[in-house]
Length: 147
Image (cartoon, rainbow, N blue to C red; front, side, top):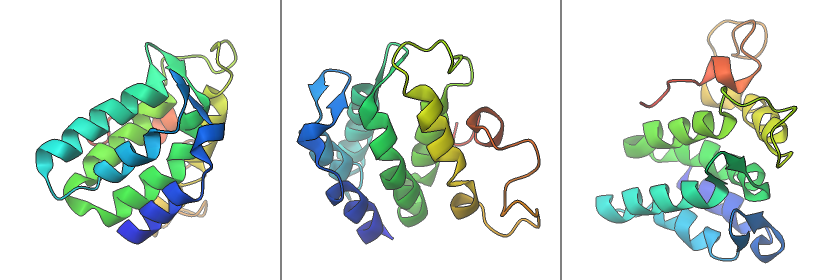
């Protein structure tokens, strides 16, 4: 599964994507470092990468492209699963109104994460592919996960 996370990183032309500070060319290295065997390197990379894709309430374009990586990392890095699931929930920020959020990416990120619920929590018996009724938005399905 870690290979799938790395493939998700490699599938994006990062210099053409913008993070909160400009072109996201350095983001792939940070994402790879979140899978490091070294605990401190992993935690530092997680904090820095999260900051680059969502800073001071702004959701940037790179947030959208990070979702497939986060899902695969959550599945393949069981020691840090909670950190990756938390990042997914944090990306959705249920306190923000996607209609008025100034970047315009928050709603798209929420939909991308919601589309992955069945992958993250399959087989719970719900007809919606693993997503309990009323949990199709990030704020309800992942909020509080991994804290």
